[in-house]
Length: 89
Image (tube, rainbow, N blue to C red; front, side, top):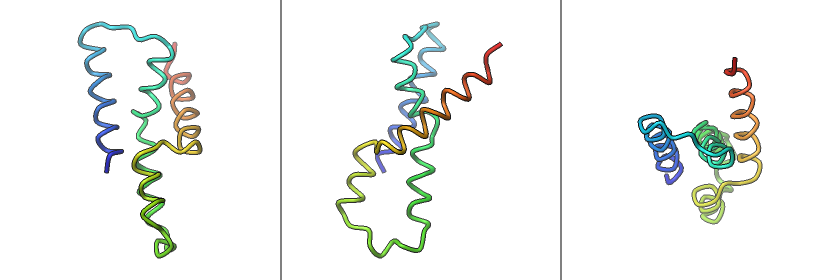
């Protein structure tokens, strides 16, 4: 799945930022942070664990694999921001 590649690239980008001492802009950090939460990977795998997989078409799989559906984006953004608020001093 392309989502795993997207997740690993987000981890790599954060590692590069840390190694170089780069302080990312807020929008740059949030866009990468939403992906690095891993929420999209978990939710997509959970989607296929339900018993309703018989009705899944190739179009639905393409949407989940290529795009970032708004519901997944919103959940990931909330989790990233709440995690960052918890981690601040």
